[in-house]
Image (tube, rainbow over all chains, first blue to last red; front, side, top):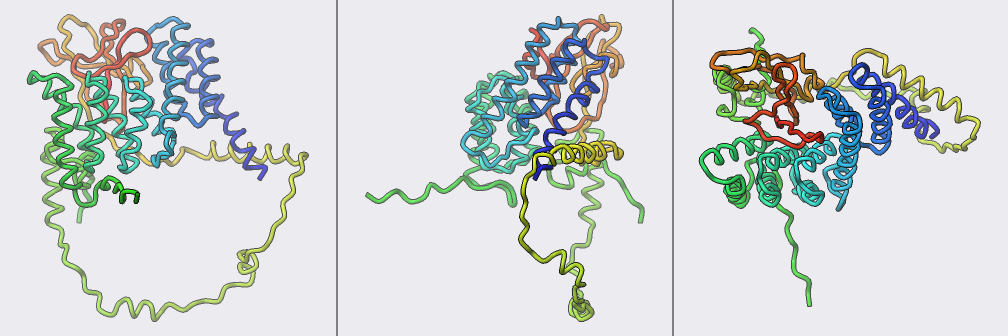
Length: 220
Length: 196
C-alpha cells in the first residue's frame, strides 16, 4: 500500500531530470526552469508533458523573447487542462489518457471550444477513431471551417463508422472543394450530409456502432 | 518461400484502413502486388478430422504441487500502516523506478509511419529547411533540396498523429506552408498543421 503512494511521488520526482534532459542546451535556463515547473505540475495532474516542452523548444528556436515563450507555455498548459476537463465532462467512455488529452488540446488550439471536444468524445465511435476525429476536427478548424460545420462533419463521419484513414482524408477533401470555389463551410456541410446519409444506411461491416436507441416514451 | 516486408502504408491497405487510391503514387504498384498476393491465398477451410479429439486424449490433468496450492490459496491478510516504514518504502520504490528506467531501451509499440513530401516554392531562397514537432524545431535538421523552377522539397517518414511545422528560409525567416492548414503558434505567427 505504501508503494502505491510512493510510486507516483517517485515518478513525479523523475519528471524533473527527464524534462531538463530534453531541454538541455535548447532553451535558456529561465525557460528550462519554467518548463520543468509546468511540466512536473502537468504530469501530476495526468496531463501530457510533451506539448509544454515542445512549446519551450519552439519559442527558443524561433528566437522569441523569454516572456512570450513563458506566456505561450502557460497557455498550452491551460489548454491541456481544458481538454482534460472537456473529455471528463459527462463521464465520456473515451478514457482520459495523455494521447486523448493532447488531441483535444490541439482541437482547442485550432479554435474549437470545450463543448465541441466533449461532443466529439461522445460520438460512440471506438476510442482510437475519436482521437483521430479530434485531430481532424482541429485540422478542419485550421482550414477555416466554422466550428458548427467542423463538429457536424466529424460527428457524422464517426457515427457512420468511417475508419481512421477516411477521417484523415476529410481535410484534403475540403481543400479540394475549396479549390473548386466553394467556401470551407459549404464544403464541410456537403461532406457532412454525405456522411449522415451513409450513417442512415448503416456502418460498413465490423465498423462503428449505431446511435443509442432513445427507448420508449414515458407512460403518462 | 521468400519473406516480403511491405511498406507500413501498404500494410494499412491490407488491413483495410486505407484504399489503393489513398496510397502515394510510388507505393501503388507495391499495393497492387500486395493485394494480388492476398487474393492468391487459399482460404478453403482445413479439415482436421479427429485431430482435436486425439490432442485432447493426450492431455492429462496433473495434480497441483502442494507449494503452489499453499501460495495460491486465498487467505485473509491483515495490513497495518506504520509511518516509520515510509522511508524504506520510498527508497524501494525509487530503486524500482530507477532500475526500470535504466534497463535498456523501452519496448514501445511502434506507431504507424507515413511518408510525406514537403514542397515550398521559393525561387529567391538560397537555403530552405523544415522545422517542427517531429525534429524538435531544429532549423538545421531537415534541409530541403532545390528541384528546379524554384521548388524546394524534402520527403520524410513521420509517425501517425498531429504535427506542427514551418519552413525556415535562408536560416532566419520562419514561413508557414501556404498549402497547409495553420494555427496560431502562440508567438504571433502561424504554424502549419499536418495530421497523419
